[in-house]
Image 1: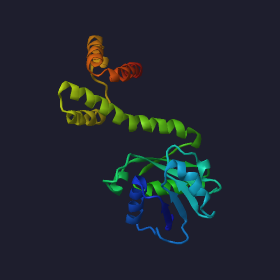
Image 2 (image 1 turned 180 degrees about the horizontal axis):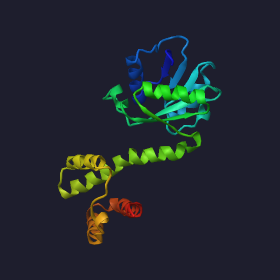
Image 3 (image 1 turned 45 degrees about the vertical axis):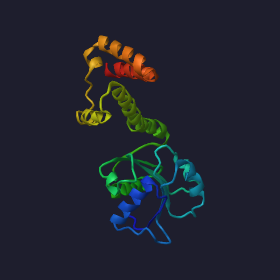
Image 4 (image 1 turned 30 degrees about the vertical axis):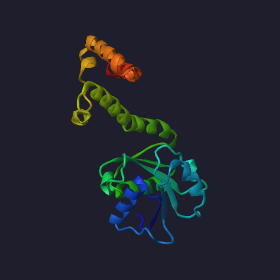
Length: 222
């Protein structure tokens, strides 16, 4: 659909996106791009967008930022790769991930869907006013997973067990479709009480987190 794209930003997402667009044979150096894609920090989007001459499509890849940040541009949309990125890997990080496409017109949505598919993503449409709730869900799934691993690792360290042994367990939980097992699934409240006592004795800073997660798990599992 488009052949000339200018990417602004070379961070973790920008680097992967740029590499994929180069693989696709698109012109990223043309003086008159058809699309300017902003891969900059959320707080910089509005200022960068304001400095771009009107004419081409302008889009960002943020999950949390509303389209109004792209003012004064009206040919605008966003494509948020629902993925976590690292500089240690390349454009293959995009392969098969989902992407939220937010647009205000049919034409903008068509361009956004095309861009997502060109990047190797699986697009779905997302309303701009649903963005904050969507992004909160993504934070639960990615950022808080890091918190859970670190909390579990701390308990393993206190128990003299190797924290790296947790990774296969976490991966298999995902592979098993997040099927709940363990004491709450069994209704084994005696074991949960034993957990509470052990955590209070050895890692009391994790007590509130354990209580919150146990309560949430019970509520969501029934």
